[in-house]
Amino acid sequence: MGELVRFPRQPAPVTIDELYAVDETLIAAAYGEAKAAAERYEQDRRRERQLVARVDALRRENARLRAELAKRR
Image (tube, rainbow, N blue to C red; front, side, top):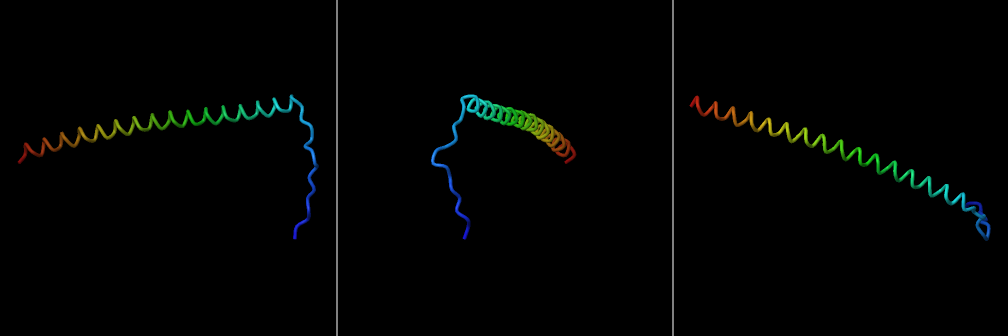
């Protein structure tokens, strides 16, 4: 079995400055995550636009080739 761990009955006192430091750290982390997510979103949107443009180009090429084939028949 494991060793018993004793916890103090009351938590250690925390200063208001320590609480603010934790808040600022959490806010900075959340901001960083949100900024990274926004950048990934923008990259995804750019990639989506590129793919849509490529599909449109392929459809136009397909239509052109079908028309050319129809003329030869």
